[in-house]
Length: 234
Image (cartoon, rainbow, N blue to C red; front, side, top):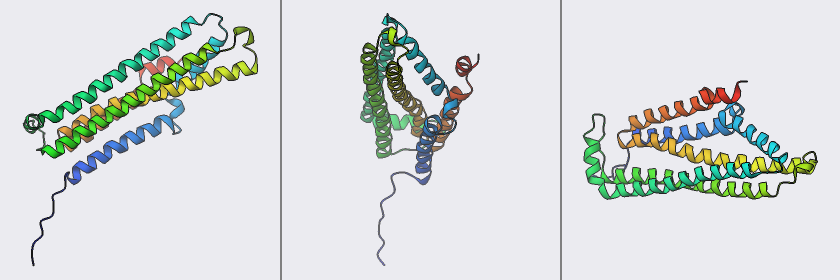
């Protein structure tokens, strides 16, 4: 019987398991923060309540320059992270031009795993995709805060603050601000998980450990941090 040469898989079973745990952790964290019964307890949810309080106070003001300044500050934060995302994408793609040199460095690490050029390129492209995703989230959040600024400009005068239509209008502004903040949070989440993803360049075990560390840090900030206690406690 003639032997057949089957191509070797690009990644080992352990690599695929580590990558699946990384993607699963990202999905689970997003579900806990945005869709689960724990959502209302997180720091993000509490800050969303302050967004509604902000718009309610804004409706009672005749001079709204302070509100436009706050929105401009939020836009500047989005612009900074969006530009940083593009720089990160460029840096990730630059790694493709130095594959051989970096592979030698990674292989010399105590826990480093021998990596082929094809594996390195796929991992690098995955990192670039994460930063592209982050860029789109930050850019869209920036655009949404532009819409918030426009709606703030169209807010009814303070003498109508008790009108039902005026209250419904500021609720819509607050909701749009909440959505803009949600997209910003998703962009930052991509940045944090990108740090965990870097562990895959060392070994699949490093990817799983780094992902677990990122999850613990982010969950603690949402549910057990000093900042949450400052917002929630009387």
